[in-house]
Image (cartoon, rainbow, N blue to C red; front, side, top):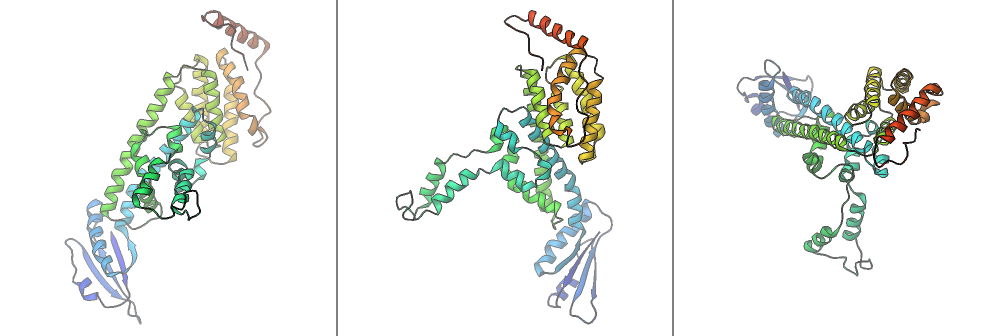
Length: 376
């Protein structure tokens, strides 16, 4: 493992050449016909111990303002953190897609779409910044003598604090989840954004920053797991309009045009107490979608939805057929776009009769129900 530094003059050369940290080899060389010279620090192996030694070297050498030609200790830390960042982003998308899929907030559903096409800063601003709040605060801070604040264009710290305390802040995160869900991310999203950018943009970081980032990412990933589990648990306790819930969630996921989120949503919905036929329907659809991934194109969407149609056309269970017919509405917007068949095979007349009979029997056996559910 090596770190290389370019110096523009001999001003600190003597100091650098006599800097010999334990276990680190130092070599210097000149660039011909220039006052420039290069210092190379190296250690055997590429592991945590060698990275820490060169991280300490890097902290010392940067005091003399060299140009950093290579910093393999930072590269090591970047590589160690990348899987954690990747895990965090994927779990965050999963949580958000699941949350809005079972939410009844229309505006939230409009906002949480195509997250994979947004950069991390956009997603965080969307979740954790209330622009109405920011605008009101700016209006107060930048007020002139003729403003609505009756000439109070000058103010004390206490006056601003008092005004700030009186402002309401509405975060999208709190609308679709809650203040206690993934609290570390909610509180430290800017730190997450900074560390994430360090990793994704190959910034030079030392052992101290690595330790903080490693701890933060791991802590948040655990909290994301808890929030996802809690969300699915709430769905298990939800007793209202199961058919409506399933179809709405599927529609919301498909609208994102992101096959991973569809599969994850369906996997989660398998735990919702729907009809037995619908349970197998969800399981088989989930597998069909997952089999079409990791393609990420219109071809993948076509393949995924064609697989779904094949599954639906071959479901024998009567309750599953009912769910399949309702599911047809969710893919209508995509039929022309991806050249899908015009329709799912319609149930036969015998199946329709069985459907009607099944619904009537179900209704007769449920006290307090006046009419059978409408088959859509």
